[in-house]
Length: 497
Image 1 (tube, rainbow, N blue to C red):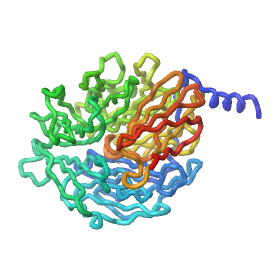
Image 2 (image 1 turned 180 degrees about the horizontal axis):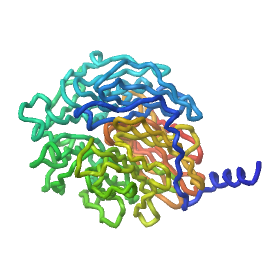
Image 3 (image 1 turned 90 degrees about the vertical axis):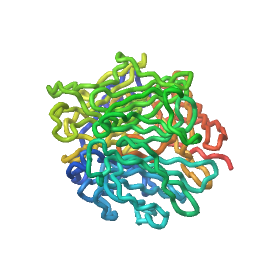
Image 4 (image 1 turned 135 degrees about the vertical axis):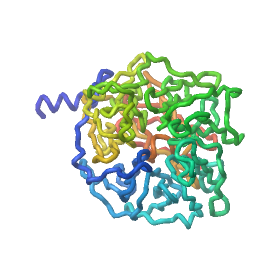
């Protein structure tokens, strides 16, 4: 091995807290695909990341808008091919879920029109099982999705967020549609209206700052105009929370949600993307949230390159440790809705790197991911199995972006995939805590959030200079297990029967 190769190998093994993120643009490796359509596809454009053939490499299901959605198979070494899939038009996004717990990942596909459920099978095969699972065929404009399992339930509860009611003759302004809860009942799903709706663009079921399972809805004030706000719905109490619960009224142009513990206290912070300010809410000891100070560096309210000084428009947000230093970073997809004159049209995506003091610094331009296309959905995943999270980005009316993470001096890492027998095979709702000498990190296993797309892949944790980690899992039924794991691989953690 020559000196340069030896140095690179040593850096990958040892890691550094000072890694500067670097990505290689490999967008030409993807099949040509764009998210297109008229005003009904100004929003949406999500990607679902899943391993549909069991080779431990993430595959991609990409919404198409007025064009058919596509399935992109990952063949390894950053080679991607389009794979046959059912022709579905009008798609806004999709979320992977093992609904029937058969070990194959399914897809819940969001549409302008009736949503579809695709049942996954071996070798990335999918069949339309919309009728088979009893999914009601509701003609709405769906833009958000989340799911959770009640204890001992065979199938999950589903929640669908809907945008503008296209049938309202007085619309589109002040014509937000109701959202829908889908309750599993004797092999079918029974719809329950979740009202009022304020044009949801993202929904996420997660443990909130109180430690309770809660539906968080992020809503677009562009169409609710006035009188609306962000919403929190307590799942156990089946009611919306208000100021009397410590949930203050917040109104913004809500586009996406990301949830992750940033402070090490076991409570998730929440990122809400919007036009203008991107709002980070810090979980407090008393179960409430406090808006992060401006000095934290996450508001990202204007473009940082490209010469456009107008406010930014944020869409998909995702927390992930890009340099494996043990501190999660933040990616935000940016892009004008279409040609809104008051908002930036040259609006680069953000890569906000968390520093040792908990603040974030912009690295998008130097990292090579500062695209000024109209980005929408996105996903961070290890597409080549080298332990570094790569990036895929959906763009409106422009080809998808694909970026390989080639950051030198990265730290150690682990992947954790949870598995349990019976229903809820992937242990959605579990809380995973990873302890090293330097850091304590916590992450929940969730379905939902982002913007119109999510992933069903192992949880990824950067470990910095640690080569082992002490992992604690709180399983959905309250069972607690402990696991000692070594760095540099993905571990499957099984819940004891």
